[in-house]
Length: 190
Image 1 (cartoon, rainbow, N blue to C red):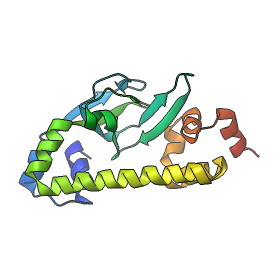
Image 2 (image 1 turned 135 degrees about the horizontal axis):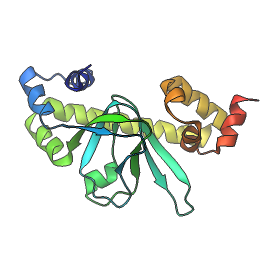
Image 3 (image 1 turned 60 degrees about the horizontal axis):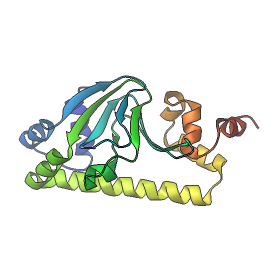
Image 4 (image 1 turned 90 degrees about the vertical axis):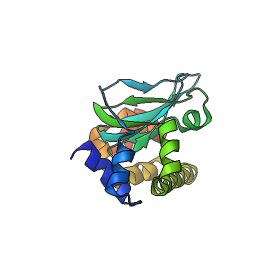
């Protein structure tokens, strides 16, 4: 599927844009290709884009002072990724985004998103809906971390996103769950 068709199908689940509106909307995106392991956003960077994943898989993560990695998000096709705090507030990035696999994305600058939202009500509706959905997903994940053991969280993740199992190395799934690779192995081999 072409990138334009993929984005249109994604948006059509929430907002209805006429052909002319969508063509104008799409004209603000930039197609980019990244290699496995390539950094898209590094801590300390100025962030001015968000990324719509066409193919491959990205991860958003934080590394603390003890050099321990905490994965905030995996982003597979039709998902969005960025350091949203830095993007919206104009501060420097506190999280990193890189490529788990080779990836194709469409990037959209913050300025262009704001411009589009002012000009096309349906686009504003789409971005508001997407932001709300992301907030709800984050809240559910936080509640799951607070209330469920690792085995339950792992099973929940694999049930919701089975493609992750083959796309993402197990040590990254372990980092997402907040456990060691060894703990994750024990969950699979009682």
